[in-house]
Each structure stands twice: as structure tokens, then as C-alpha cells.
Length: 381
Image (cartoon, rainbow, N blue to C red):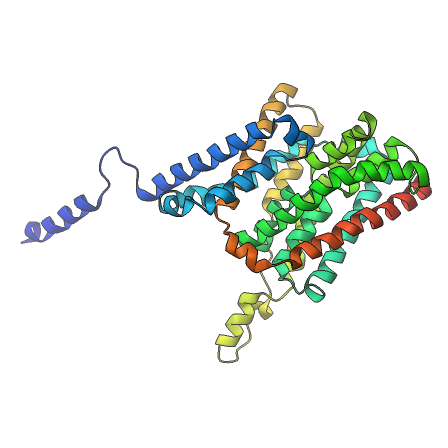
């Protein structure tokens, strides 16, 4: 009786098990999604080496998200059932690892290279730009909070990398992230052509100290992306480019404390989910007063630790070069995955307000950043 009862169960189990040599559906989706992401990342990395794209400031990250969006809005709908797990893994897990390894591009010695004035300028530009974003984004431009925070982070720190690093903290939707990245691409690319013209104007009217070094600090402290900083400053002089990159790296280093402070800020704000649950409940108060739990961005601590390790020069330079190349691929995979999961319909729904909002922040970076640079340089030298 017992064996007869168990026989159908054994047969059912046997038929439900995957055939030998075949991956379970979720593992197959993981592998195929990773392959798709890395193919797009590889193509983007190769394309970023094309000279005219380099001169235009288009990095592998920018190209990856564009290619991802093209594929995501054409053929990916048919591919998604078989590779969604791997694409999601690239967008989330590989992103965090990419941000951690990004620390191998920086050292604490970079701070000394720009001096106290450079650090103060970067800090003031960051806080003023992000503060303006928070004040204007929701009240004047009526944008959702996540889009405001992402555009504010991208404008005030380091462009697409900052947007992607901020996404896990604010738990944004792919469309919100893509809108923020798009603003970085638009206005960062515009800066590449605008800043050399501003340098020539400065030679005539002396808004800033009339030196390539001073203008390099200004460029590094106000332009969005690292690649865009390099492209804009190289059009001025090699000296301006070197100073601009150092100033930009110091600004990038502020990403980790920014994420920690942002996480603490978000935890003190009522969440939409808490509000919704309050409406659906019978009038009972939400847990923790409707405030979000503190989402500690642990990868930010990893980023700082890697910067510290790199500052000690324990890792050979050739190993560091390999790691940074690998990191570029990881970040490009994350960008590709983001593009794959973004639909143009969502961008159309966002409208022109995000671009207008980002344009205001861009104007502040140019004008307000020049004022900050001028005042700090005069006070601290």
C-alpha cells in the first residue's frame, strides 16, 4: 500500500525535474541575460575608442545605455522571458560591484593635489547644486521625488555613475534612472563645446583667475561626467586637463558620504508605500510613523575602502589597470541592462520638465560654480 502510494509521487517529481545537461529556467535566464549585457557592454567599449566619439565626450557608459534602449524598444520584448534574470542581476548587483571597484581610480592623495581651495570648491558646488535640486524639483517643476534626487545627484557629483549609485538608495524605477542619465548626457555633452568658449571669454573679461590651472578647477568642479571633463579641458590645454581631472576625482570621492547622508535623509521622510498603506488601513498609524527604514548603502563603504587601499599603493599599477578596465565593463553592463528595461513610452510620459529642471541646474553649475570658484580662490588662494 505504501509503495503504491509513493510511486506516482516519485514519477511526478521525476518528470518535473530538469533534463540532464539543461540549466533550470532561472539559471538559464541569468546566463543569457549576462551574455546579452556583456555583448552590449563590449560593443559600447569598442565604440567608445572611436576618435570622434572620444572627442565628443561619449563614454562607454553613455553608448551602452543608448544601445540598450534601442534593443530594449525593438527586439528585447521577445528575448525578455529568456534573459530577464541576468539583465536584472546586471542592473543591480553588478552596478554595486562596479561602484566599489570605481575606487581604484582615486586616491586620497588627489585631495592634496588640488589643495584646500579645490576641496572647498567641490564641496560647495555639490551641496549648492543638490540643495537647489531638492528645493526646485518638486515645488517648482512638480517632478516626483526619485527623479529629482537622481537628476540632482547626476548634476552635482559625477553624472551617470552618480545616478546609478543613487538608484539603489532611492529605489527608483528604470524610467526614472534613464531620464536622469539622459539629462547628464544632454547637458554634459553641451558643456564640452561651451567651456572652451567660456575660457576664451574669461581671457577677455577675467571672471576667474586668468590661468589654465584655475579654469581646470572650474571645469572639474562643474561639468557632469569624467569623460566630459576630459574632453572639455583638453580643448583648452594639457595643464587645464590635468587639473580638471584631479578636481573631478575629488568631487567623485564625495559620492560615498553623499550616499550615506542621502540614505539618512530618505529614512526620515514618509514613503509613498506608507501613505498608501495608511489610506488602505482602517485609520491605524503606519509602522515607524510612516518613515522609511534606513537603507545603508554598504557598497559606498566598500568604495571608500578601495580608495584607501589604492592610496597605499599596495596594488601594482598593471593590476590596477586591469581592475579599472574590468570595472568599466561592469558599469557598461549595468547601463546596458538599464537601457534594456527602459521603454520610450515612459520617457515620453516624463515630458520636458526633467530637461528644463536639469537645464536650470546646468545654468547654476556654470554661473554659480564660477562665483564659488572666484570667491574661494580669492579667500583661500
